[in-house]
Length: 313
Image (cartoon, rainbow, N blue to C red; front, side, top):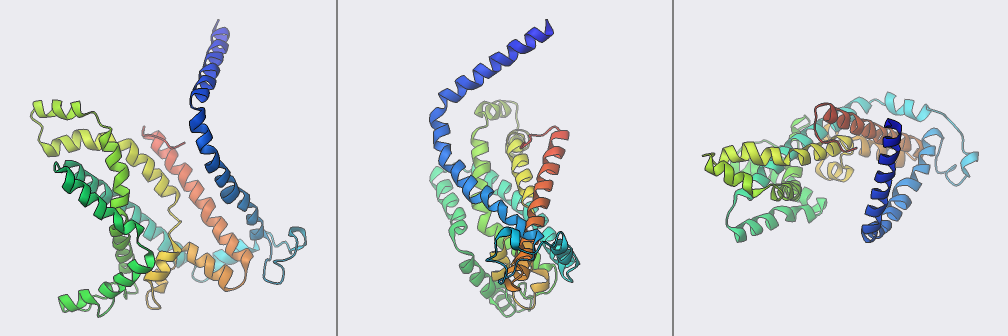
């Protein structure tokens, strides 16, 4: 009996899934261009990872794949034994952890404040102004940041001090970069949390008011639990991309003084690969970065599942 029931359930589920796919055929067709883009620009280029196991330089770049010298894991060993690899990993992890922690907390707080505003016009104007920096180039942001935070900049002039937050060869530079990035992205990141808050049943708030809950209690017991699944999913995605700290941001905000605490894996890959014309070594560093990111994604997803939270996969 149990075997018969199981087979019937499978047939019902299969019919249901086929019917659902037919009902959503237009949505599926709309996703086809994205799938093509994903395959062409994300999966097919993975063939380039083969260079990580070869000695690929300008003189051998034009050779067919099978004629390039095969070096095994030599490029990975060179990368790990590089004199600055340890500092680069420390910079990458430090900036990522700070960025995820500060960025997530500030985006949630900002979304909560916007959600509590009852003047609709003021709320829309504030939200629009807050996410405008997201569309500003890092070239412009870095120029402004250096004028304000560099040694002898606007901040030092106003405070009559010599803070030089962008000229300090220490982890203080990480804090400066994270704060600048948070200011740039907090409005844009808050949009997701605002959308999650909009999906919370308003009846819960009305019931809480009747029970005498004040505004902070409603936020703590209704709003935050309501957006918890969204926060978990975004954290999992953020942890998965923890090593993908932007090279452009680091290059533009840094200078010769702070470069020891500014170089991250993507920049290190560029310098050792393109800068030294050793494309195999640069590919090996990039491949290591991607594989560690995938591993972190699965670990974070597994931990979220064990804690009873929403899983991404």
